[in-house]
Length: 261
Image (spheres, rainbow, N blue to C red):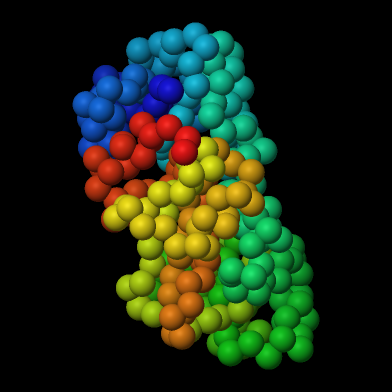
C-alpha cells in the first residue's frame, strides 16, 4: 500500500505542514509515500512526486473532499494504473450521514433528513425533543453559537449560519435529537479492512458491530458516553480524511501496517 499526502503549497517536495508528522512517521515505518499539490489538483492537474508505482493500492491521507472531488481523485489515480483502497461509493457512504444512518439507527440520535429549502419546523412537528442538533450531511456549526436549536423555529437560524460560515450547505440538512452527553468522553476509533482499532488497544462492542455493517475498507467512528453511561455513535467518516485526534502517530502507523485478523 502506498500513501498519498498533500504537499506544502509553496514547496512541492515537502508534505503540507498539517500532515508533516504523519508523512515522516509513514516513511519511517517503511511505507512508500508520494506527494501531490492539492491546489493543482483543484485546478485540474494531478502529478505525484515520486510517481506512484503501477499496480499499487493507494491510501489518501489529506484534506476533506466532496464525493465528486473524491471521484475525480479516484479517476486520476486510476489513470496512473493504480487503484485507491476506497471506491467513490464507499467514500460517499461514510462521508454523508444519510448514507450510513439507516444502518446505525439504534446506536445514534434519531435524525430527520430534509432538503435545504424544507420547512424545518414542520419536519420535526410532534417530535417534542428537548432540543435539536442541526448539521448538513457532513459538518455542524463550529462557531460560538453552536449547532443546537432550542426550538424548531431556531433550526432555520442554524442552517443560515452554516451556509454563511461554510459557504454552502453540503447535501442537505440533518436535524438530530439532542441527547445529554458526558463532557470530554468522545473517543475516535478506526476500522481498517473490517478490523476495529482503538488508540489504547480497546474497542467497544458498538464499534465491532459497525465494522461488520459498513461497506468501507477504512473509516472512523466517533463515540461519546451518554449521561447514563451508554455509548452513542456521534459520527462516521471516511478514514482517509479523518484526523487522528488523540491517536499517537506511531499507533496510527502500526494500525495501517496491520494485516486482517
